Amino acid sequence: MSPSFRSSNTFFKVETRFGEKIPRWELKLVFILYFNRAIEIVYVRRIYDLYMSRFGKRMRRYLATWSDSFIEEFNEDAHRRFLEEYIPDLYKTLEWGYAFDDDKSLGAFLFVFHSYKPVSEPNKSSFCRFEFPHDCDQDEIQAFVLEVAAMAPFTSGTCGYVLQPWPDDVEAFDHMYFVCQRYWGVEAWNQDVTVNWLADRFKCISWLTFLGTSILQEFPDLHPAASRAAHAYRELPTGAMYQTRPRAALIDLNRREDFRPEASLARALLPAQIVKHSSFGGNRWTDENSVQWLHRFTPD
Image (cartoon, rainbow, N blue to C red; front, side, top):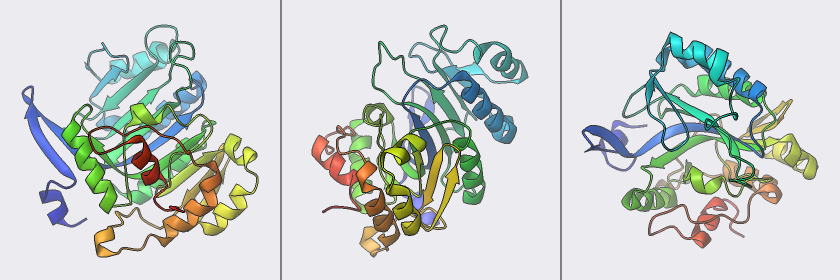
């Protein structure tokens, strides 16, 4: 990515709020796996161990994902508590998930896992999410995400560029709308909305698209077609990964950048893609154009 992108407000905008710098929107590389039920503790522990072995030295803070939790320091003592107490006791208390980051305002490494309560929060997809700086080594990311995806029986997932708007910031979501209309390789984002629609389908094509065993079994013709359409694919014990191109791309329509690799894979996977999704948020996104954007590579 050229320096001009970073210096403009297209992909990055930081403001000072409450005495600290906050990114109103930011381009990142994001990997997320969705699960159609609460993630079993044995899988949480495997993923936690892998992440901490790779990126744990970067982590400085953590908090529980319930709304009234406080940010706390992540250190060796906290790591030990996670191994001995917090992860084994997951779902027994208010804590149904945790988030960890490196305390950077821009370009942060972040790991979050969260499960939804089946009675009070029905039909929501639980998830594990990993965020990386936009210029992080993509070979390293791909190797890591393939290891993670092989560890737990997921429903679906994606990995690629995401423009993250600050939650509840209408202008940020409106800006995301304009960016995503031009750059088709940048995923529109509102995880709180998307988790309501992915019980047995996947969201949209990304640089790396993951389909779990349950979807592949429901659509037996999907994998042969997708593996032919993909730049590369990988069969996993838990499903499969389909890759559109060697590296993630912004796909700038103003420059007429080629999106045929995405369109080819999107057509192959179309039977398993969601057909409903509510508005991503803000004034520009609607229920209708949110679904249209998700199907941007297969408009007919």
